[in-house]
Length: 391
Image 1 (cartoon, rainbow, N blue to C red):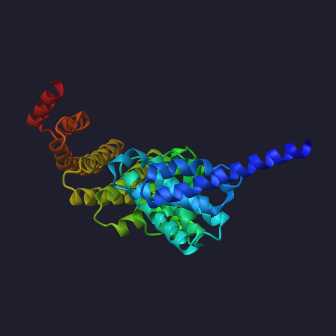
Image 2: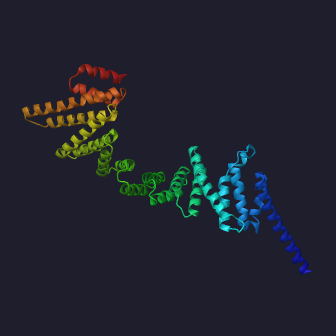
Image 3: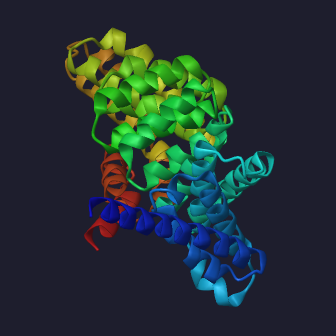
């Protein structure tokens, strides 16, 4: 009785294997006849069967079926195309892994390699329509195909990182940007994007460390220099910011914003020196700030901040000189000191007037001009400005 039971089980198992083998054959025949939907339906059960599921031929056929659906222009297959390219690649990968004497390995490798290239293009397409998760999947698949042939596709690695970052897969993005840096691929962008990923995560230490490493690797990168400047300004590390600005200006001498930024730092430094009573030290710093503000305005004549800051710098210097003059007891020396201070105040006028011309509604500019007109006894202009402020 036991023998009969065993024999019955064997018959069932044999029948099952034969049935699945028939499905593989049917799928192949449907593929040959161009009946791709039927081929797809037939092949799927065979991929999960204990026997046919570990036969490379099954996966080879499955890959070809999905490949043909992907390339098909048949309208009836339009709704079936989603995911078919990646499924084809996965199937060919599985076929290569399992192997089979009934597979043309040269053909399999050619198909596998070719579809990897198509994955790259699909990744670009998906990225361009802001489907970053899909782009990530395609670039990752492309990269895995290259790796299977002992090739590193640097472009795919970098694009995987970009897509991962945009898809908010930050851990993967960090890993892939680091790999891209190791590969020396698009070094400047890789470093900047890695740094920005850390910044987005609020990891200030890694952000700073990445930019520091980037400066060593790409010393003349304007983007990296500018990013470091922002860090130093935020942390009030002005000497480091000035050092970076010197390099940045050397690289881009027509950038008005860089001259303004350096002038602004120098302006703050000289003001701090004056507040501490270090007037002699403040003078050369003040003069450097003037030069940078003037250069910024020369490069960009409608640069409001440069015009206003230049006028304010002269104005504050003139006001400070008046305070110094008021402490002089000798009448002649007082008179000379007061005249000098008034000349400096007058020098502020054209720059503040320029700022007012650029931005007529700015209250700070109008207030400064009103006070300056009063100090220089230009009462008609004072009344005009006073009226504007009252409206």
